Length: 244
Image 1: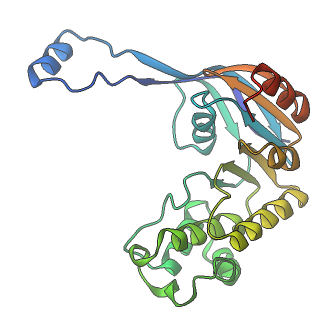
Image 2: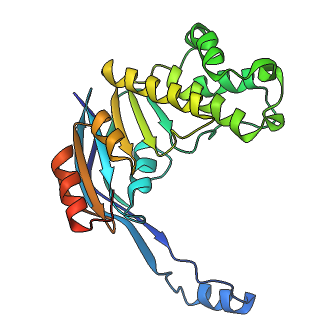
């Protein structure tokens, strides 16, 4: 079964013209002047099957994070089609969807509801989330009282413990102290061994090879190559030895 499919997906953003006087903005509006567009993705197509791992490689600005945002439903494409089958956990901007005035416990339940879990399912996983985050007595305190590290620990624990079918990972595993980082890596590896589907962006080639079967190489929004992860990484590295 296909977990994620992109078909001729294009995504662009308007370039900011910088500071303009009110008169200049009105003139642009009255003349229907179109803002210049920046194309983050151009006609990108790929398919990720359930139970597989796919890495997305490319230099900064290649469109990797835009691709993950589209897959997560955080943005809409200009054109093309995106299909996702399965419940998804996003390890992108950890803490997205958290509310600073809610307690840690309330945010756990809120995030569970946002990905479509029932109250019973959330309660069944509640203790595991709390144990993994290890934030002690702060569970009943508002999130705004947390340190950055504590908030990230809770966010990672929520994402990794909600039993997703698909995991989107974008350079977020370096969270907390070294011991907690190791615990995060072990949990991600366990999820991969259990057959979870991974769409992953990272500059750590070792982690990419461990989590992913295939890879795609993006350059300035365009798909350069797709294939087995080692072949794509080798081609990407050979194009510029300083990469990866």
